[in-house]
Length: 358
Length: 228
Image (cartoon, rainbow over all chains, first blue to last red):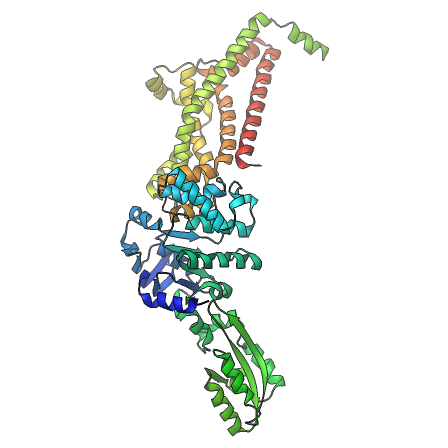
């Protein structure tokens, strides 16, 4: 797959479809209590990319994604979508832009009063398509999501994965430029999650649709995203290439989400346990270039140090793989320093100080 | 038991038969007429109650407050009192304060506000997610009301309307008070007032049959719409 290079080309292509500039959204409660759901968010999504937003529940992701199609309005800042400043438009003007933005929901939100074909045809009716065109398009989409035989079924007769596939077909039906995926796999079991993610990826790759996906599941980001923003308490605390964000070990509390989701970094409790039965200096090595790391580790004997792998994890993203290894290194000080510096040549290496385990 | 059968066999059917039939027709006329008007008014009011509430599609505090207040004011008035109290308005609208049409006028008022509540309550149970989905597709608010909100609640609405028709039969039985006819008037004037309980019971049996038939029909329709 050469998607890394095409993704790069898209990114540098510089055709921004969605731009958030210092966007905040505050919900005012009854007694002067207010909650800032989104706090000073700025980011840009380019045409053709899959942009992931990840964070714990309550981080403001839902509000953020709903500001893209104007279901929520920012309290301050500006949101520009498809060349129009959504945040400045009236509800009736926003409607026209919404026809170019599909949305997939966590709870599917299918119309129970319509069958599968009726659900998929609804956005086409809204957009004013003729009956024949509608029927052709519905058949095409049901074929795309693999549910051609379910056209006459009603939502309650479908499994969760099938419902979400109908949801995706419905979101894609009016040929939108952008697809918003709001926790699209959170209500599904792991096997159907894969099915739905593959479908979203195909929508991006085959139909060229730009996707914004919010989720609390690392798997979703790994499987489909080109770039990712990490949200915490309403703020975007990190943003960038999926690979860069997840492969760089960080100490910031902000990145705890990444660590906890990847499970490739020992927690404080892990460290205490490791210290109890292991001697030596603990270092964390990032496996960006795993072949080079393997080579450097092979030099341990020559440098007369020994090491033990005490923790680690690898993950595969859309374009590559990465991970972290934690080693306990033993030997005399000079040799260990030399070994660590050789490892540093392969990527980021961090030594975990003694007190961190206390 | 034999005595009871004899009582009805020996009844003057040449008199009571046509009387009862006319009473049935009058009841059906009053109920159908009132329902045909109140059904629509109640639907509009119910949809407005649902959509103007806070966070609704047409969220509008003053409108909701006024509507809610009117519904809560009219609904608790016992129908027999409303029938009398509303007479000045009835004369204005119908031209007379007595007779079947006068009763229909009062029934329309009472049923409209009752239906408004029933419609509102059925709409509240719709998953807000489907409304959000329709909004996200760029559907207008009016389109959402007609093509999402009402169809999604269609099954429960049928049951709600069945309940209302039966309540209308109940109201129409009071027609005799203002000189109207129907089964209520028949039961009181031909039966109760003349100390003929078996004649009163003729009306009771007919009403029971009507209500059962309506409920069976309503249940069937609702089940068909709900695909259960």
